[in-house]
Image (cartoon, rainbow, N blue to C red; front, side, top):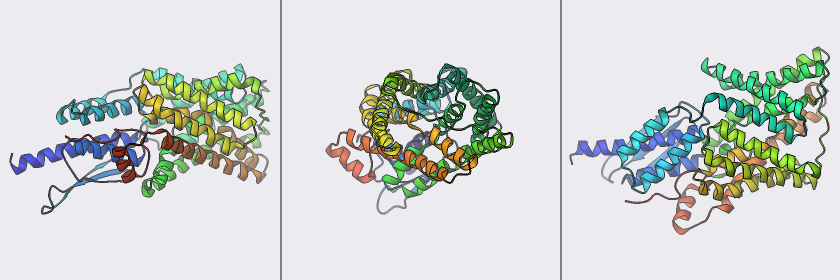
Length: 436
């Protein structure tokens, strides 16, 4: 083999690794997971000693064939963000097959090209309906009746259709969040104006949860915990910006409502153990609906339902026992993280799919609205405390999930070496590269 042929072989292996890493990062995977998977691909391609550097928008791989040759570095820019769990699952499966030698590098490259260019596995209109089901489940979880559930269902569909149109117009995600939150608040104002026998605030809370569900906060905290501070800062900034869009949209709606004399306040929510089956079922429904809306494989829906229901159960019991919202959420998130590893692997999907879906019922939609209403509608600085509580809940979700994953994953000698190098648990990708 000539030097030129060897150079082409190296390039093709690095290109495959870069494209796989791009899919993982764009789908919300942590930097540690993406780094380990890239190293697994390069090791399976007989490239030893590669170095990987990942920022929020780019991936760089450096390879030095021998100590007396100059290293070569390849970079790929991550240009898009998507919530496509089917693509993520299939790419994860492809990496495992390639690592085991079941497919060649060229076959893996062609399969990856097919996966990244393929459309969603389900009709888009079913995903739109799934977003409505998720919002309806949120109102049930918060104690709403059938009428407000129906309103939240329709509102969520309108928000999703609007955001899809804005996305086609290449409107930045921040403005999509503002528009979606404003639509939810406007619907609540209309319900208040017509004296509908419902709790209008639940529509806003459901809309906030829907918009929060697409924010990859778990990846940000995972990167911070595992020592990838640059990507952690970038993901955190993105999460803050998108959450700020939600706050801006709700605040604008509340300000207009106050000018019109509409004060859509928060009705007190009391958790009753008699409602426990409804709350657990609503949590499972929300998790499944989000997973389906994100195009998760159908085989993942059952474990997602189990994990979502278990998280809601733990949260309800802990809240009833007066442990406070943050610790109750942390315990529920720990349950989600602990159970997601084994259930995800057994169903043939990355634990990340189950984790992200299972934490959706725990998102602090009502707490954020409560804080904004107290600040905007009542002019009460206690709203700052409510917003701080929402931040604490968000951190509790991410940190609880990661702790659950740390404890759940089996530690073996080879896996420990890889995890020591990457300083974190694995939510996607092979446990270790298989050497050829």
